[in-house]
Image 1: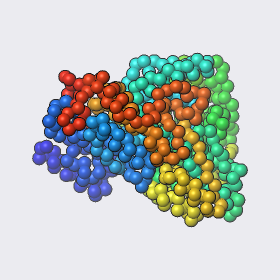
Image 2: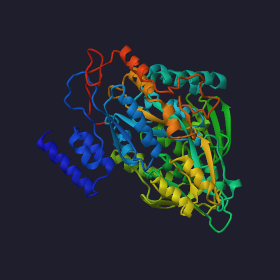
Image 3: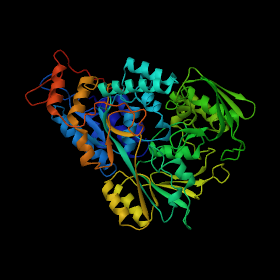
Image 4: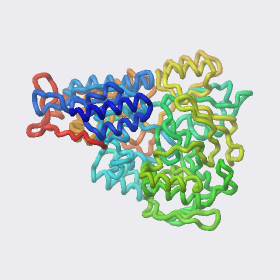
Length: 588
């Protein structure tokens, strides 16, 4: 490392510690410099580990890094990774577990896609994910590798072709067969090492909220949009006070910055359709949705809607909302509007959508996914951002303006977010305020529920048996457990060897033994995962997939041997003959 390089890193450290630059900016600048190994430990930023370490055999697989959140934040994720890492070491992988806060880990994985090896991750249950298209297409289609959801860099032309075909297949049974084939490909290639479909566990004060007004949505649980607008207070306490373990990164209708952030956007901003508690799309901000043919949809806008600043919601706003992500202003929402050929106003209260081809999931993945945004707010913002060469994902409104059932009041970062009910909304909430408090510690959240500091435990990643015991022994609490459409998994970065080899990934899945994770960590509150289509979606989930349930180290080593791998005298994995690792560690 040169003196100039040392000076540059020192300057970055000074800027970071003084607060002049954020973690995200720090990670980006370090990535641009490259070779940040000596620097990583001093600020807790993960850099490529072992890339320059001296190795006795040039074929020896380097030390691999595995990013995970702290145990206090997400115990089951941390403990699951400990079990998995122990099994992977038995097949010769040299692993270093790197613990970091969620916001740092997500910045690294999302914005520096060349700079990490493996990470623990979760896809969460959201209403629009009850149609399998969002996961099936966006997680693994090659078009989403650079900036979208395909952060592991999976690239399979056969998969791409079938993922595109299921989108245009309007016959439900034929589409199901295509989805079965897609799940079989993923089961063979193992771009994710699936762990479990968690049973989301929630609890709330049934002394504060009428249990009959708490809505359990299919594949989602009681933490959902319908609960938040229908929950009815029983007494003088009319504020719903919830917890989150993940730090909110953005309140932005054009940026999907995390699960917790998404709860907020769907309350502040309306959508033309919503996924109802039974799992089907229904009109919402749209009064009526009519299919004229397989590629033409006419939407009639609900009358009398207004933005939170008092201006009316118009058809021009609707057109703008669906056109905005089509360029480069919102890379994360771009896939959801990509099937649209045109959006055209029809009179004062209707909008016509023309699709490029039939799209089976359009209501769920388009009309129920895209947030309606005010043109008069965002159009000048776009002009400023374009002049700066950045997109809308990096912008934060000082006061977010939507038309939804809740209005933004205040955001004290890393403390709490306050929304208030919008009494003018056509489905005005029964509560007065929705208050989300940052509680990264599981024990603190559970204690907050019993003490009354919160009255809705909306995120709990601790021991479900402890939660059940607490609820059973505390008067006025109710617990609800639901299998969700999301899943937990180990994500290997296929841009970086050795994870570009499907045989190695299959060996990893064979070695880990997810039944230990299910039994020892989740107890009876999780179902073994074998696909990116949850078993909560009975109709769409493929039968007879290999589940890699039990650990089989001998079989895993056999897979590696058949692929040409071997082991050195210390038991570490060696690449096949003729292959040595060339690792590019430049910026993403």
